[in-house]
Structure formats: C-alpha cells, structure tokens
Amino acid sequence: MPAINYNEKIPNNVNLSDDRTLQRALEQWQPNFLKWWDGMGPEKSSNFDVYLRTAVSAEPQGWAHFDYVKMPDYRWGIFLSPPEQERKIHFGEQRGQDAWQDVPGEHRSNLRRIIVTQGDTEPASVEQQKHLGLTAPSLYDLRNLFQVNVEEGRHLWAMVHLLHRYFGRDGRDEAEALLERNSGDANNPRILGAFNEKTPDWLAFFMFTYFTDRDGKFQLSALAESAFDPLARTTKFMLTEEAHHMFVGESGVSRVVQRTCEVMNELKTDDPAKVRAGGAIDLDMIQRYLNFHYSVTIDLFGADQSSNAATFYSSGLKGRYEEGKRTDDHVLKEQSYKVLEVVDGQLQEKEVPMLNALNEVLRDDFIKDSVAGVGRWNKVIEKAGIPSRLIVPHKAFNRKIGALAGVRISPQGKPVSATEWAANEKNWLPTAEDRAFVASLMGRVAEAGKFAGWIAPPRVGVDRKPVDFEYVRFG
Ligand SMILES: [Fe+2]
Ligand SMILES: [Fe+2]
Image (cartoon, rainbow, N blue to C red; front, side, top):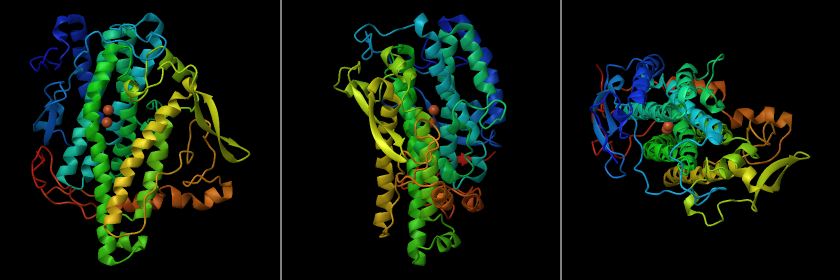
C-alpha cells in the first residue's frame, strides 16, 4: 500500500503517476472541479484560513493532519483503504469467489449507476450548504461546516476516480455531468429528492448532518461490502471521514436542545412563544425540524420492494450494513422480511421475499441507528429537569417514495383523514413562520470563543484545541 503522495498535482495512494492516461484525464477534470467549487462551494470564504484536517494516511490510526488552509488550496485527492489480501466475495450468488479488481461487463451499467448516484449526493450537499458560512453561530461551528464541505468535495473526487479509472468514455462523461447538475436546479436537478431541498439555516444543517449524512453512512457501508474491490476500498475510507459529519449533526442538535432547556429554566416556562422571545428555539419547533429531515431522509433508501435491490445484492454489487457480522446464509433466497402497506386506510405488515426488501432492511438499520442519538438528545432534556421528550416519527409519516408515499399517517403512526392532516400539518412539519423565526436568529458570530444565543458552546474543541481557539481567520 503506497503512502499518500502529496508531491503530485492530485494527492493519491493509488500510484496515479503509473497510469499517465488516467492521471492526465483527472488533471483535466481538476480545473473544472475548482471552477465548480468557486461558483457553487462555500460563499465568500475563499481567502479565509480555516483550521482543517487533511488525510495523510489511509490507515485507521492517525490518518489526519490539522492546519490552517485556504479552502481552494485544500488537497483533494484519491485515498483508498488498504487492500485486503485475497479478498473474497462474501454474499450473493458468487459468494466465495475472488473479489473483482475490474468491472465485469455484465455489471457495468448497474455499477456505474450506483457510483453516479452516490457521487451526485456529495457535491449536492456542498451546494445546499453554500450560504451557511455567512451565518455561523461561532468560529468553531464555521470550521466544522467547512470541514464537512471540503470532505464532501473529496468524496466527489473518490467517485470520479472510479468513473475515470473503470468506465472509460462513459465514466468521463458522467464525471462532467456531476459538476453540471445542481441542487434545486429546476432544469438540471440532483438525482435524489432530499438533495434538492434547501438547507436554509443552521438547525436544518445540524438535522441534515445527523440524518442525511447518516444515510450516507449506511449507503457507503453497503457499498464497502461490494464485490467490486476498488469501490469497497474507496467507500471504506470515506466512512472514516463521514463519522465527523454525523458528529457535527448530533452534537449540534444537542447543543441547541441544551440552550433551549437553559432558557426554559431561566424563564421558568414551557410556552414556545416565551422561549422564542428569550432567543431560543422551542422544543416543538425542534421536533418539527426533526420530523421533516427524518422523513425526507428515510425516503432516500428507495422503494420498500425493489427488484433492483435484489439484483444488486445477488450479483454482489451492494451488500447489507455489516454484512460480515450477520449469521444467515448471505444469499437470502429463502428468507422473508416484513414491510408495511396500507389496507383500507390501516397500516399492515406483510411478508415479502427478503431479497426484494433490501432497501427496507437498510432503512430499518438506519432507523435503529438514528433512534439512539435522539435518545441522547432526550437525556439533555431530562437532565435539565424538563418533562417533554423528542420522538422519532413513525416511518410511514410524510413519505414520498414506496408503498407509503402519499398515505396520511401522523408522526405517532395513526392514519388520519385529509382534514385532520390539514389541521395538524403546522404542528408536525416546519411552517414558513418557523423557518422565518429560525432565520431571524441567524447571524455570524465571528469572535473566538463567542456563541450565538440559541446554541450552547461545545464541551471540547477540535484537535484538542480550546473552544475559544481561532478556528477560522478571516482574510
Ligand atoms: Fe460524503
Ligand atoms: Fe457526509
């Protein structure tokens, strides 16, 4: 495994200079990427010195180096996890055979589609978050936003490398198209719905990084099992970066909740209007944001029954989350799984072949993982002596994809009429007023160690630096 080579135009640990054609192709894509970053990346920040981490090794221990960097100078590169000697395919119909070092012809179009769909989400989230730097609640948070942004940029590089290296002309065209689609663009939108939604404020950003980056974790984990070894190694290293994004989300929401509870206790009130007048975000509104981001994100896993999901698994392209830790036969031909359907207005479980339900399996794994963090937010509320709790809405709530699309189910999982839905929607999902209130709290706090009034400071800083460290120096 070569160490990461930083002497080349494109840092890499894949001996890029041994393949001149590939190197040249990627060096031609590089200025297009930088142009995209300049136009669609973080706004008005290109001359800031940001205390960022950069990968210096793909080994799990000690891979990161921290220093001040201007974002356009960030060393985006190609980093794959170390190869596993004689790695075998460990699920699907070719279980036990050697993993593929190249793309088998019969799986070419499916693999390309999987890589393009994953790749498309990476620049999309940068686009969704481009305005947020202008209203960061502290230098610490500003730095975390930028860290997430540069790493999503690197994840784009990761997918583009696979497209260029393994998919010839089609791959190069797809790599260009990844820079041409834009989040929310009516004519040329990003591929998946959640990545065309706005991330208008920092509460939305923290919810996004908690829930939607966690979708990333589960998709990447499933791809890290792939029989196509370069994809498995690529996504494995992306997962080490992804962990920080979810930390930003979980700790961000936790600090918002903490501050809300402090204000509730100071003012001795649970009246949302008084909490807002006190400059904090009431728990009901936090719940509505949570409901929105959760429901939009679980749609990303796709239809609950999908023949594509079955094909991807059986042919070894995409495994399950933690495939290696499961004790079944890893072929799944005989197994079944329960999905929800609506019969006469009521939710019912129905047994279907598991292979067809693998999107639902991954969605349920995601749900388990999400619930744990919401429990930790509730601990903050409990510790403050406040009786209310946040809930994870029912998985049938507000769905747009699959058998539950368009079915009216309350966050508690109760089927409701069109009239009930209309009467309650403002209690369940963020309203224009909610968004306007949160927007009214947003404003850049640029002094080291200072935090906006709606969010508590973190307990520790980044890279063992103090919380009041100057994480961003404005140019
Ligand atoms: Fe990513
Ligand atoms: Fe991410």
